[in-house]
Image 1 (cartoon, one colour):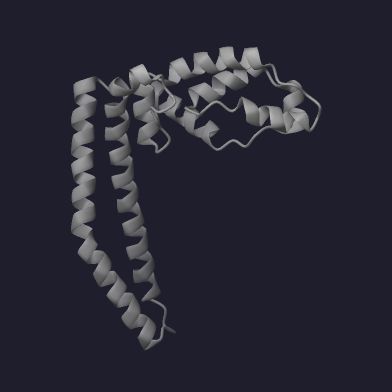
Image 2 (cartoon, rainbow, N blue to C red; image 1 turned 45 degrees about the horizontal axis):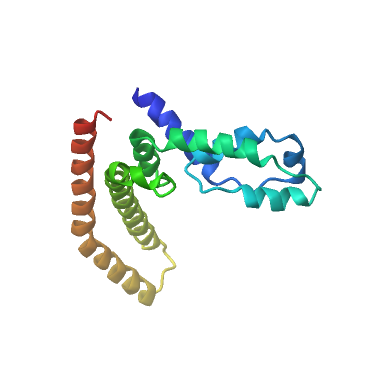
Length: 183
């Protein structure tokens, strides 16, 4: 079951960065599939963007097929586990879902997004610390730069406790939420 959710999240992420269609893509598009893909990936309605892109080739996308697909895709996306796994990867939002579902979906988004942000902050902190430590290995380093890098490393080490606390707290809450909700 978790593998299915992980695959679903990967699918959502793979479509989240797609650009608007080219004219050649407009010519062969299955508009129901395009709508379903947009809805299933948690995107807001993009039909107007497709119309504009396809107009360059004098092609009119099928609005009714797009709507049917979008509605189905959005229904699939607007499930607690889909929102959770997409948010865990930094891509989820419950905002495109019907307003009546917001109260149910918000906790799934919030706990996963909190973990994602804490993990991202920890990774960025570690990368920056490692970068400055590597700078110190340069034998041609000037005294001014060395002093500057050492100051920055000290600043980063001061932040370490807060960043690690936020990460471990988010991880603990995430684990508890997953256990309580069977994720």
